[in-house]
Image 1: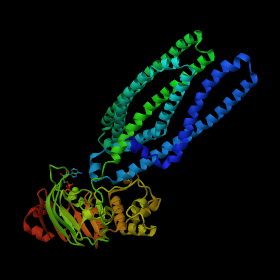
Image 2: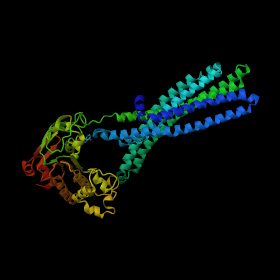
Image 3: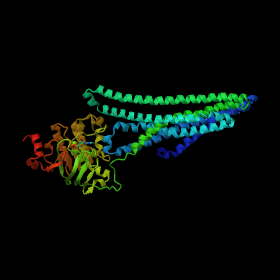
Image 4: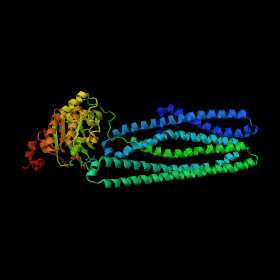
Length: 571
Ligand code: ADP
Ligand code: MG
């Protein structure tokens, strides 16, 4: 995992080396001070060598000035390094998540994905900056200070490091606990984002049912869970901090006692003693640093783990290695022996055979839940059939590039998803390369003009999140305008007008009829009146395709369709 992590440093090698170099130099300089004090007390002080003292002070001043510059570089450029890596990871993750299949989104909560793209990655950025650098500096300082301590008085040096193993064991112990706590914390954050997304996204439903209190109570549960997790992680942090504080003070006290003894016995000068004491402070400093790393490392690593997990989730559906671009399709569709279920137990489609000629308009009717939508969503490969093949113009869709296939299929659904932008942006979504002229033309053909003219900002009117400021009919017209712009040879209309009142439906039907002209069209409809004129009607039941034929034929046949027809129109 660490190797994968360091791969992200690659583009910033220079930045990393500069940052690293400065950090190391700065750490080495810190070692100079105790030595200087040692010389001060032993050599300069007794004789009152003022000139040398002045020079020594000037030297120290210069060193501190240089060090403060280094500190600036480390803090600023080091953080730039961290944020660069964080941004790269976020971009990579976003691009990847966009490619994951419908099945993935069926089973994952948006809130969790949100957390993984925001808070988790921030922790990784922090670690990317501090992790390796702090650890290395800590090691350098630790070793440097120890060597100098050995040089001053090896006996005392050896005596004072006996606590080190204890500190390491302590660190490892707490580190392990912290990673677990942070993983739990990330899960909690995801859970609570999911809750917010759900409750706020559905706030209109919440208020309509006056279930605000219920939602608040649900939210309180997640909030409480998060609080408890945080309590645990703070407790671990505090235990770690207080245990290591005590160990460190113990070392200083130990040095103080033993050092005094050595000075009294004449094995050490007072200057060496003071220098040694200061060095042991420097020696213990990294342990604080290590504690800081202990805090940021598990957070970062927990974040990185869940980042990798998501990044390494393969899309169920992707281009085959030898995927080809079929060029413009005519729209001859053939399902042969297609079997599909959302899970392995229940099959929604069983061995379905169906042929649709280019330019034909085929309507699907049947009870809700029979699998009409499912049948249609296999065509753009939103889901993959478990058995059988689907071909368009004789080419297996599994062999086509996804982009070429989906680029030539247009879908209008019952609930149109609009983005929180302007009317113009939402139509333009149908073809991002379209010119303004083409977008106006599409609006015109979808009969949106009157509506647009009635708006204060015309095409630039903002329609609210998911288009909340529009009526059902207006949303549908927008969706139709989008399709005119996309201009695909194959069209799927999935209960596009089912949610509308009959008046609006009639008006929209006309636009849809114009839209489907010259395209292979699959219509799923609820009201039979809207599909009477289809070239063919296919009756889908849970057992599969039950009947097909023209409206008149099916009405006369006395089967399921006849019954549906009687139910809607009387006999
Ligand atoms: P229709 O469009 O004919 O009303 P659908 O194709 O939407 O029917 O659904 C067929 C069956 O598949 C239903 O039993 C439904 O519960 C199930 N189903 C639909 N979508 C999913 C999904 N994303 N995950 C799991 N099951 C689904
Ligand atoms: Mg459906």
